[in-house]
Structure formats: C-alpha cells, structure tokens
Image 1: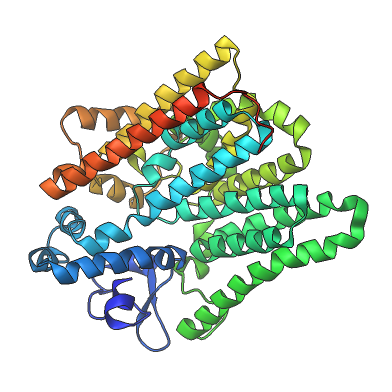
Image 2: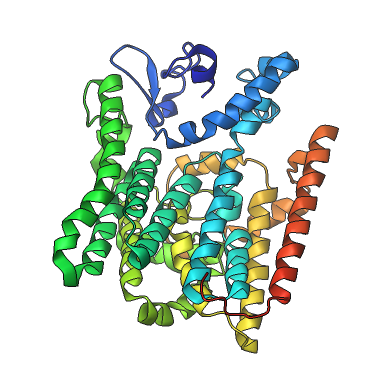
Length: 452
C-alpha cells in the first residue's frame, strides 16, 4: 500500500526483503518476471485499505514521524510492530477491518429483521455476533478474513432479496461481492457453485429463467476472475500462476487428516469454533426451524459451511496460534449464527441461555482483544502441528487468560493523550448508540414489523 502511494509501484518496496535471510517471506511474496517482488496473497485487502492509508499519509506529511520511521525495520519484531502502529499511515490503514466488520453486523441485522420481523431479536442476534464471536478480535487484525466474511454473507443477503423481488441488480451485486472475496482470498471461490445451485432451485419451476439468472451472477464474478488472471500474467507471465509457494507443493499443503481435524474444529477444546465462539451453539437450536421455514436458503448456507469445513479439514495448517481460534472458519460464522434469530423469543429459559452464552463469548473475545501480538505463539505455530491429544484435551483459552492476569495487556488508547481522547470518544459513541437502540426496541409499538 505504501509503495503504491509513495512511489506509484505495484510491487513490494525494493531492497527491504531478503529471501536468503528471511525464507518464510516466500510464503507471502515471490519474484516476478521483471525481477521485482510481488505480494502473492490476494490484493482485496490492500485495495480496500488504500483510501484509509491515503488519509494517514496526508497526516504524516503534516507532522514529523521520522523518529518512528527510523525504528521500523531496525528493531526486534515485537518493537518493530510497536513503532509501526504509531505511524498514522499504518494506524489508518488498519481501520479498514473495524469498518468492514461493522458493515457485516449491519447486513446481519437487516437479514435477521427480514427473516423474523422482530427488531429485538435482530438486535440481540447482532450483539451475539459482534461481541460473542471471534469476529470481534479479527476486526482488530490486518488480515483478510473480515473482508471475505462481509463479501460472502452480503452476497448471501443479495440473493435472498433477489428471491423476493427478482431484481437483476442484486445478482450483479452478489456476483461482484463473490468476485471481490475471491481476489481477497482465493479459496472463497469454492462458495460460488452453491450460489449457482441456489438460483437453479429458485427458478426450478420456470427453467427458462435459470440461464439469465446464473449468467447475471457469473458475469460480474468472471470480471474479477479475469482481472486476477491479467494481474497474474503481468507479474509472473501466466494467467494461472499466482506466485504462491503452495501451488508448487500442493501435496505438502494438503496433508491434513479430516478424521482428526474435522472433529477438532467442531468439538476439540483446543480450536473448536464453538469453544472460541460460544453463541454459535444457539444457531444449532434454531437450525430446525430455519430449515423448515427457509429450505432453499438452508441449502446455500449448509453448502458454504460444509465446503469450508471439508476444504480446511484437509489443509495441513488449519489451526491458528494462541487466542485467535479457527481463523480459516471465520467467514462461516455469520452463516452458522443466522438461525439464532428464529430461536430467540420471550421464553425465559431461551433468554437465560442466550444471555449466558453472550457473557461467556464476550469474555473469550476480550482475552484475544486485550492481549498484544504474541511472537512466541507464532513461532510455535510455524514450528509444527500440535499432538492429536492436544487438539481435544488442551485448552488454549485458559493459558491466554493467565497472561492477562500478569498484566500483559495492550490498550492502544493508552499510548498517548491524543489516542486516549479518540478512545474515549469512540467509547462514548458506542455507549450512546447502544442506549439509543435499546430504547427504540423497548418502546417499539409492535414487536413484529413485518420485515420492513
């Protein structure tokens, strides 16, 4: 991003990376046919963060940040990140994921509202998603999962709306969102066939409409696919060569054992998606009613969930270190939680269970949010996979909580007085917004608003 803004170059900064001394860099970048280094990860995150980074760079031109710039790249890894975060350009670029996750919650709220028509249920379901699942800590990272989550779930919402009013624009938008998720993280392409299946099922009784609907969806998706192929050819001389190291070592990358990794993803204490996002259990309670009421949507939802589980159960390094949970499964979290809006009602035991899991989930997320970058955990992650017994009998949450009790806490707004002011303002906005929403729900004249 910085190289694009400051030098107008699409490659990585020259003279900054050495493959001989830092071999692990080959996982993230490769040498192009012009001799320059290029990022091999999807470019969707960089494109989305570019406007934020431009604002940060404008601020850097007005203030002196040379003291911090001189430390970046020369300090130890942990201090390197510490000084990097003090640069306005880096701070603003990293704001992209909080904004993206806020949009995800907005789409989730509207989806629940249209499904159930109850404002209170939609609001509570959104609170569960935003504070009780690992979407919260991932909004504080500069990783690709939040954007993929927004794109996939928004595409799901678009085709859901299309079933109601048959607007072609919704299919074009859904295809574009799927395309953007693809250029952000290539593996998300495996969800596209399930969207095609959904459209076929919608128009099954009027088969003549199927080609047009599928064509609209795929046309905007293919546009992003062609852009990616052109970018591949520009960098590496082949439309199918993304420069990723695992393309040459597919046998090594996919050596996972589904009979071990799949149960570990679901029920293991170490990396279970339900352990790190407890409110997802409520989605299981609402699954039966969801399938009965929205059969076609259930096909698409379950197809995407099973595709992700099946793919990453075969992936060699499917787990993630420390308190980050099952990071590859982040995009399916809104899908798993969506049926919860059909489960929440005025029955006392359901309310008690909902608020109990919300409290537990919020505590789990706070551990990840408050802990600083853990270099030791990253080294352990790249050092090899855990033992089989560790996946099921060893909890990562408890040792992470103990680190907090020793004072190992990171609060960015305590770095300086200006950041403290910004932090207090953001807290005030959050509290005031929550208070306003609760009052609106409390004094709603009718709980059922017809999904309007």
